[in-house]
Length: 259
Ligand SMILES: NC(=O)c1ccc[n+]([C@@H]2O[C@H](COP(=O)([O-])OP(=O)(O)OC[C@H]3O[C@@H](n4cnc5c(N)ncnc54)[C@H](O)[C@@H]3O)[C@@H](O)[C@H]2O)c1
Image 1 (cartoon, protein in one colour):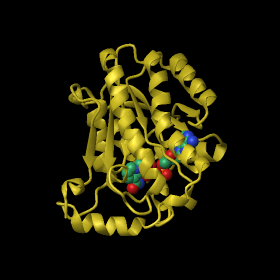
Image 2: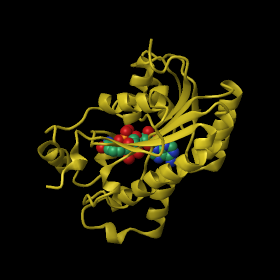
Image 3: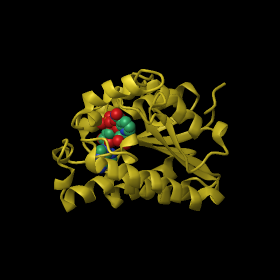
Image 4: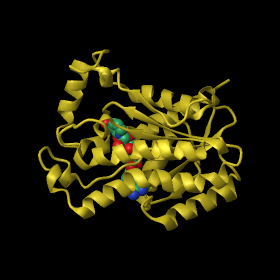
């Protein structure tokens, strides 16, 4: 018996077997969930996701291409969800993007309007875009999660415009939770510690973040993908039925330290 037995949902954000979304999927499957996957358009991206989920024992997965910055892609994905599944129980939003040119220490102030808009669109607005479409495929309620980072609250040099996007993502989580709660749709976010993924490697000074986290966090270490995956499964399950609008830290306690 798993806490996700009988639940179906869609995962956005597996690039490879190091992605946060991959670890989340691993925990969801271990807990009994059935997952479908959205990937950036293109055969190469599709092959990467198929290979990554094969490692989790998933063969012939439900797949849909989606550039989440395009409304027409999202419309097509949710139409396919309605057609193939009828209704779903959860959505994992584990996507983000910012032009790495602006993710270097000291150059936040050089961010262009276009780079700002793109980062906030792909990394924050897309949660709202998914939630507004999720309402029609979650008639019996559901649970959505996204992935945030402490750089959305405090200045982490190099995280730059992505920090602004995470601040927007976290507050979008609260506003969505407030409006969708009466439909029994819950919206939460996980503020995860640094993990060596493709996206993380685009952030200037990422190595220092790992060292600093391990030195300063109460648990004196970095976190694992599995720890985020298990918290995600909890938030997407009925075990967290009274929890919405929250930012849950999975950071070995790093955020509680003042010095
Ligand atoms: N790795 C970390 O240290 C860390 C820490 C906290 C939060 N996060 C967050 O976790 C989430 C997942 O990132 P990750 O670290 O697993 O890296 P990742 O590179 O493995 O995943 C990022 C995903 O975003 C997808 N993506 C980018 N632009 C997209 C678009 N326009 N449409 C659809 N998908 C798009 C990519 O295809 C990729 O699958 C992100 O929100 C990231 O900010 C990461």
